[in-house]
Image (cartoon, rainbow, N blue to C red):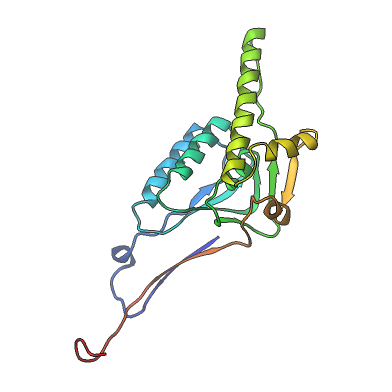
Amino acid sequence: MHRYLVVDPGIKAKRADLIDDPVVIRVNKNFNEEMAEKFATEMAKAHETGQTVIPVVLDSFGGEVYSLLDIVSQIQNSRIPVATIVEGKAMSAGAMLFGFGWHGHRYMAESATLMIHDVSAGHWGKIEEIKADAKETERLHKLIFAKLAKHLDKQEDYFLNIIHEKGHAEWYLTAKEAKKHGLCSHIGVPEYRVEVGLTHKFGLAGAK
Protein backbone atom coordinates (compact mmCIF):
# COMPACT_ATOMS: atom_id res chain seq x y z
CA MET A 1 0.00 0.00 0.00
CA HIS A 2 1.33 3.42 -0.97
CA ARG A 3 1.01 6.36 1.40
CA TYR A 4 1.07 9.97 0.16
CA LEU A 5 1.10 13.33 1.89
CA VAL A 6 0.47 16.19 -0.56
CA VAL A 7 0.99 19.73 0.73
CA ASP A 8 -0.13 22.79 -1.23
CA PRO A 9 3.02 24.62 -2.40
CA GLY A 10 1.53 27.84 -1.03
CA ILE A 11 1.97 26.49 2.49
CA LYS A 12 5.43 27.32 3.77
CA ALA A 13 5.21 25.68 7.20
CA LYS A 14 7.20 22.57 7.91
CA ARG A 15 5.41 19.32 7.29
CA ALA A 16 5.84 18.22 10.91
CA ASP A 17 4.05 21.40 12.07
CA LEU A 18 1.04 20.74 9.86
CA ILE A 19 0.01 17.18 10.47
CA ASP A 20 1.02 13.96 12.14
CA ASP A 21 1.76 11.27 9.57
CA PRO A 22 -1.05 8.69 9.60
CA VAL A 23 -0.12 5.39 11.20
CA VAL A 24 0.06 2.36 8.92
CA ILE A 25 0.46 -0.87 10.92
CA ARG A 26 2.52 -3.58 9.22
CA VAL A 27 2.13 -7.14 10.46
CA ASN A 28 4.99 -9.08 8.92
CA LYS A 29 6.19 -11.27 11.79
CA ASN A 30 4.87 -14.27 13.65
CA PHE A 31 2.05 -13.53 16.07
CA ASN A 32 3.32 -13.49 19.66
CA GLU A 33 2.91 -11.40 22.81
CA GLU A 34 5.59 -8.91 21.79
CA MET A 35 3.95 -8.34 18.41
CA ALA A 36 0.50 -7.93 20.01
CA GLU A 37 1.91 -5.35 22.43
CA LYS A 38 3.52 -3.43 19.56
CA PHE A 39 0.22 -3.57 17.66
CA ALA A 40 -1.57 -2.05 20.66
CA THR A 41 0.97 0.78 20.86
CA GLU A 42 0.52 1.62 17.18
CA MET A 43 -3.26 1.45 17.46
CA ALA A 44 -3.18 3.94 20.34
CA LYS A 45 -0.96 6.29 18.33
CA ALA A 46 -3.30 6.07 15.34
CA HIS A 47 -6.16 7.30 17.51
CA GLU A 48 -4.19 10.48 18.23
CA THR A 49 -3.22 11.53 14.68
CA GLY A 50 -6.66 12.59 13.46
CA GLN A 51 -6.65 9.95 10.71
CA THR A 52 -9.99 8.53 9.64
CA VAL A 53 -8.92 4.93 8.99
CA ILE A 54 -6.18 2.64 10.32
CA PRO A 55 -4.59 0.51 7.57
CA VAL A 56 -3.19 -2.85 8.70
CA VAL A 57 -0.95 -4.36 6.02
CA LEU A 58 -0.51 -8.12 6.46
CA ASP A 59 2.34 -10.33 5.27
CA SER A 60 2.51 -13.17 7.76
CA PHE A 61 2.63 -16.94 8.11
CA GLY A 62 0.67 -16.72 11.38
CA GLY A 63 1.54 -17.59 14.97
CA GLU A 64 -0.03 -17.85 18.43
CA VAL A 65 -3.81 -17.88 18.63
CA TYR A 66 -3.91 -16.06 22.00
CA SER A 67 -1.98 -13.15 20.45
CA LEU A 68 -4.39 -13.22 17.51
CA LEU A 69 -7.36 -12.95 19.86
CA ASP A 70 -5.69 -10.01 21.63
CA ILE A 71 -5.24 -8.15 18.33
CA VAL A 72 -8.77 -8.98 17.16
CA SER A 73 -10.12 -7.47 20.38
CA GLN A 74 -8.11 -4.29 19.73
CA ILE A 75 -9.58 -4.01 16.23
CA GLN A 76 -13.13 -4.62 17.37
CA ASN A 77 -12.81 -1.97 20.11
CA SER A 78 -11.22 0.63 17.82
CA ARG A 79 -13.01 3.98 17.54
CA ILE A 80 -11.66 4.35 13.99
CA PRO A 81 -12.40 1.95 11.10
CA VAL A 82 -9.62 -0.61 10.62
CA ALA A 83 -8.76 -1.66 7.06
CA THR A 84 -6.91 -4.94 6.54
CA ILE A 85 -4.78 -5.28 3.40
CA VAL A 86 -2.97 -8.27 1.88
CA GLU A 87 -0.55 -7.61 -0.93
CA GLY A 88 1.19 -11.01 -0.94
CA LYS A 89 0.14 -13.55 1.66
CA ALA A 90 -1.73 -13.90 4.92
CA MET A 91 -1.72 -17.40 6.36
CA SER A 92 -3.09 -19.10 9.45
CA ALA A 93 -3.51 -16.39 12.14
CA GLY A 94 -2.65 -13.80 9.48
CA ALA A 95 -5.60 -14.89 7.33
CA MET A 96 -7.92 -14.86 10.32
CA LEU A 97 -6.83 -11.35 11.27
CA PHE A 98 -7.46 -10.20 7.71
CA GLY A 99 -11.07 -11.35 8.02
CA PHE A 100 -11.60 -9.13 11.06
CA GLY A 101 -11.06 -5.91 9.12
CA TRP A 102 -14.08 -3.64 9.36
CA HIS A 103 -16.97 -4.10 6.93
CA GLY A 104 -16.10 -2.76 3.51
CA HIS A 105 -12.44 -2.37 4.53
CA ARG A 106 -10.80 -5.68 3.59
CA TYR A 107 -8.52 -5.46 0.54
CA MET A 108 -6.54 -8.11 -1.37
CA ALA A 109 -4.19 -7.68 -4.29
CA GLU A 110 -5.38 -9.74 -7.25
CA SER A 111 -2.40 -12.10 -6.89
CA ALA A 112 -2.53 -12.36 -3.07
CA THR A 113 -3.17 -15.60 -1.17
CA LEU A 114 -4.92 -16.51 2.07
CA MET A 115 -4.45 -19.83 3.85
CA ILE A 116 -6.82 -21.03 6.56
CA HIS A 117 -6.45 -24.17 8.66
CA ASP A 118 -7.33 -25.72 12.00
CA VAL A 119 -6.03 -24.10 15.16
CA SER A 120 -3.05 -26.22 16.08
CA ALA A 121 -0.67 -26.59 19.02
CA GLY A 122 2.02 -29.02 20.02
CA HIS A 123 1.23 -31.03 23.14
CA TRP A 124 3.85 -32.40 25.53
CA GLY A 125 3.81 -33.67 29.11
CA LYS A 126 1.77 -36.15 31.07
CA ILE A 127 -1.28 -37.77 29.52
CA GLU A 128 -3.74 -35.68 31.51
CA GLU A 129 -1.87 -32.51 30.59
CA ILE A 130 -1.98 -33.49 26.92
CA LYS A 131 -5.73 -34.09 27.20
CA ALA A 132 -6.26 -30.69 28.82
CA ASP A 133 -4.17 -28.97 26.13
CA ALA A 134 -6.06 -30.75 23.37
CA LYS A 135 -9.37 -29.67 24.90
CA GLU A 136 -8.20 -26.05 25.03
CA THR A 137 -7.04 -26.19 21.41
CA GLU A 138 -10.47 -27.46 20.37
CA ARG A 139 -12.13 -24.66 22.33
CA LEU A 140 -9.94 -22.03 20.67
CA HIS A 141 -10.57 -23.57 17.25
CA LYS A 142 -14.34 -23.28 17.62
CA LEU A 143 -14.11 -19.85 19.26
CA ILE A 144 -12.04 -18.08 16.62
CA PHE A 145 -13.93 -19.51 13.64
CA ALA A 146 -17.30 -18.73 15.24
CA LYS A 147 -16.16 -15.14 15.94
CA LEU A 148 -15.02 -14.75 12.35
CA ALA A 149 -18.30 -16.12 10.97
CA LYS A 150 -20.30 -13.78 13.20
CA HIS A 151 -18.18 -10.81 12.15
CA LEU A 152 -18.88 -11.64 8.50
CA ASP A 153 -22.63 -12.07 9.14
CA LYS A 154 -22.57 -15.81 8.50
CA GLN A 155 -23.80 -18.84 10.39
CA GLU A 156 -21.56 -19.70 13.35
CA ASP A 157 -20.42 -22.99 11.79
CA TYR A 158 -19.89 -21.61 8.25
CA PHE A 159 -16.10 -21.90 8.19
CA LEU A 160 -15.99 -24.91 10.50
CA ASN A 161 -18.15 -26.85 8.04
CA ILE A 162 -15.98 -25.90 5.05
CA ILE A 163 -12.80 -26.96 6.83
CA HIS A 164 -14.42 -30.25 7.83
CA GLU A 165 -15.57 -30.87 4.25
CA LYS A 166 -12.00 -30.32 3.08
CA GLY A 167 -10.77 -33.02 5.45
CA HIS A 168 -9.09 -30.41 7.70
CA ALA A 169 -6.43 -29.81 5.05
CA GLU A 170 -4.93 -26.38 4.55
CA TRP A 171 -7.37 -24.19 2.63
CA TYR A 172 -5.77 -21.77 0.14
CA LEU A 173 -7.87 -18.94 -1.27
CA THR A 174 -7.25 -16.54 -4.12
CA ALA A 175 -8.61 -13.01 -3.91
CA LYS A 176 -11.67 -14.01 -5.95
CA GLU A 177 -12.35 -17.01 -3.72
CA ALA A 178 -11.89 -14.92 -0.59
CA LYS A 179 -14.40 -12.39 -1.91
CA LYS A 180 -16.85 -15.18 -2.72
CA HIS A 181 -16.80 -16.27 0.94
CA GLY A 182 -17.09 -12.71 2.23
CA LEU A 183 -13.56 -12.55 3.62
CA CYS A 184 -12.45 -9.94 1.08
CA SER A 185 -14.40 -6.73 0.39
CA HIS A 186 -12.33 -5.39 -2.51
CA ILE A 187 -9.82 -6.86 -4.95
CA GLY A 188 -7.05 -4.32 -5.31
CA VAL A 189 -4.67 -2.41 -3.05
CA PRO A 190 -5.79 1.01 -1.76
CA GLU A 191 -3.62 4.08 -1.44
CA TYR A 192 -3.60 6.40 1.55
CA ARG A 193 -3.52 10.01 0.34
CA VAL A 194 -3.53 12.95 2.75
CA GLU A 195 -3.89 16.39 1.17
CA VAL A 196 -3.14 19.65 2.97
CA GLY A 197 -4.25 22.69 0.99
CA LEU A 198 -5.18 26.36 1.00
CA THR A 199 -8.58 27.82 0.17
CA HIS A 200 -8.55 31.39 -1.22
CA LYS A 201 -11.68 33.56 -1.06
CA PHE A 202 -12.18 37.10 -2.37
CA GLY A 203 -15.15 39.42 -2.03
CA LEU A 204 -17.32 41.31 0.44
CA ALA A 205 -17.95 39.67 3.76
CA GLY A 206 -21.32 37.97 3.70
CA ALA A 207 -21.78 38.47 -0.04
CA LYS A 208 -23.40 35.66 -1.99
